[in-house]
Image (cartoon, rainbow, N blue to C red; front, side):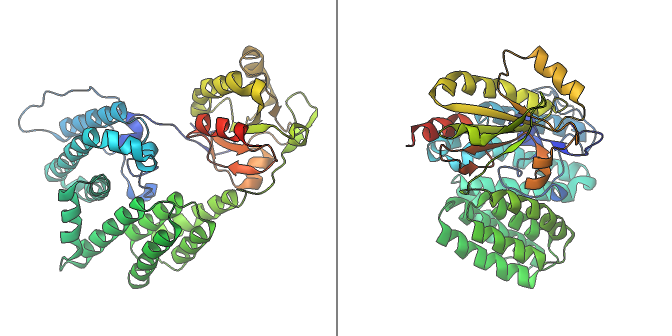
Length: 388
């Protein structure tokens, strides 16, 4: 959902739609310019039937229904793409169930491209994403396919195969900075010889989103700055805001400003507490969907030292006040809201936040520990509370 005045984005969470629309978003990281959402390409509703009895010959719509059904199955098996990537135990347990579904999606992508030439290019992108994920999950057929492509006499196919192999290598070595740097060396050489490649720019965006190393992130941004493709230019603009956020990690962070009741508030008064910061707005559907999670951790951990601070990006004080009054028992924590500057909160602007909900975690010493806490704050909070 989008605010008409602030023109900022709200972002949904994990679902079958997320697997379908952005299999390569949080999972692989290709920019939106390279991905074509399943439901958008023909106007077919994304919440179609779980099963389809297709006539012969199958139509474009039939195939898309089946793709969405497979995406819904993926969501049931693995509700979070990020967990599949980042959690070794989850990956080991779920790979045998996930791989057949990804293979099914790969076949549907082939079928859709053959059924309608209009979708040949977007489905080629989707197929690349599926192949990378399959190879990462240990599917030898997919790994062999990437190798074969990388050796193709067709330069575009060869580049795609090389990019895919490097992305698999990157995923296998997440958080290993020297290994990530080695992959980036090869990506940088590809960028030098293919400065106008949109797929390569998208892959570099992937690397940036997945690395936790600030120096590597800066290096990726510099490589993108030197590229000439449309996606590279878009990525550079996005990464500038992302870098501003990442710069907050492991540094002291104090948040202050007028609260919804007009009084001044500062997190300095919460020294020794763990703080979950929630940038949100009442007009933001995904923000409201996250509230039960926030309410639960507050209920579970407030007496143990957790505080929650809401930072409202509402367009009017009336909208926020009404919502807070209706949910007073469920949301007892303070809310920062600047009546003199409604809409996108000044702190959101300061930190380069361009979509909500966005959640930070601040530790007992007042140091920012995460600017992406939304995914797993339930796990992070107990660990921070246990720190001395």
